Length: 268
Image: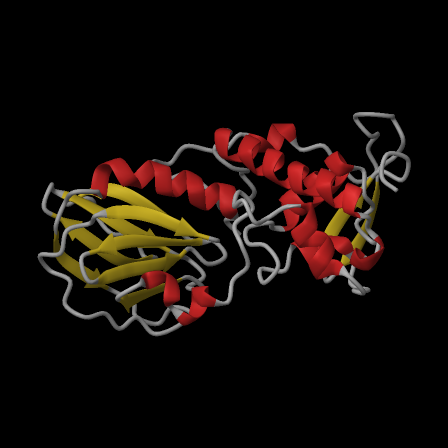
């Protein structure tokens, strides 16, 4: 599914085409997404910004925000008004510049909500942990929240109540970069190791955003371009191959039902 780098890539791709323009219509072809799509009248509202919180995008409007989640295989494209809608094009936001922001979601696992007032207070967002680039996300924060926890450190950093946006691919890569085995109990990771891990998470996500995300099955950017971070992956999807650092054969396990790959020599 699209993770933080893919969602951020989408935000950057669509923002120049929609910010400053007014909504002339919203077309809901299929309201049966993850939650039923029920929107108030948005005609005439100007898009003031496109922001991201975790894996959610928001078109910031004068009286609230239109919150969009891409689900498992969804994507947002900016298309011309006369572009025919495909079978899975479920929601169009029509703009006064002749363009349409189109949500296409084959699995219908995405969502579209209008949040009046402060959109960040929406129930889907309010309880989320900090962004990985926020100042509060550091070694002290991780060490404090991990104290006494037996959960695997990989699952710990993938918990959106701890930190948002660290999906499976990027958790694998960050733990490799930090030299920490994914199965270690979070409570047994030292503060010094968490300092390395926090830096590794930020660096991994920064590089992935710069590469336009990772293309796995369904993701394409806002304008249809592929992400290129796949070529930079050091462990994810490379089980049974040699480690790029030491040559040791990479091992694979499943944690929380997710594919997990690590180097038994480089990661402790």
